[in-house]
Image (tube, rainbow, N blue to C red; front, side, top):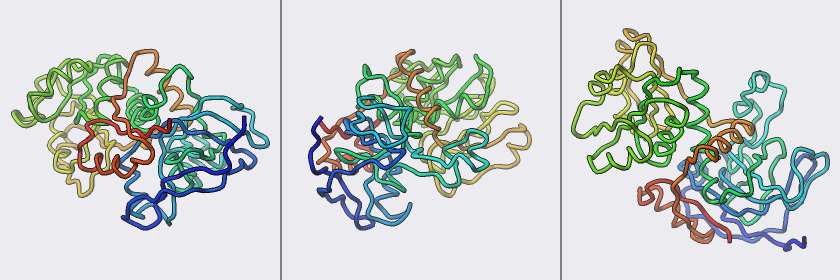
Length: 338
């Protein structure tokens, strides 16, 4: 395969400024890396942290939800080969020597590489990917549909399964957006009784189609009371970044229940009394490793879990980001390269 001499990338050059489209020489993979021709890349709220200069120095090419094909393999790479369909997620590499790596939490490595944050990501036609972080993806799955599973998908799937909650337990999902619509599907397929929590009666039918057995309209009834009428939630998955919406949920937890924070919300106030009375806990979860992500994708493929996406071309990256931040994209925005 003859590769072009240059690549096109959307670059964050100045904090809080629009992305700039630039040409760069085609990169060559170093030992332990592969070169990926990108087919699609999801757009995530975390990308705005990169663009705003909050995650490290610029310039940087954002994007930690990219899917593509391996077109060059660096020295020493054995786990993926030329022509493989792979993905690049938040976890972009690890040192395999720290305490986090020792317990398999590679995404929490003290020397972690992060695609689109500490190394250039998927807002480009080609990019480099460390082989240990390459997520192997079935070629039969549409790239734009897989891209959100590399972040939102693995986050909701991995966080829930690692809690080891018994099947059949009540799991509440707060929010029906990019994370929430996937959380409902995963939780249902994992054997839980699902209660979706969102604002407005108009979302009831949609929540039921996703697999929710119950729908709670937070604008019309007290969420905690509604959950307690159902016996209390073993887990409440907070997928909407609303600080004010989190504390009222605690009253809906069952004894020893867990409030699972998956969306970034600042200035959250917590009622410690209710936590203590219920022996309840609050937990966060940071996506997953390469292996976790492959498992999340395989699970989605087996059980028909679908990410709902709106596609944009690479040259529309700024438009996609604006649509996401202004909530014009209801679920997930994805850049497609072809």
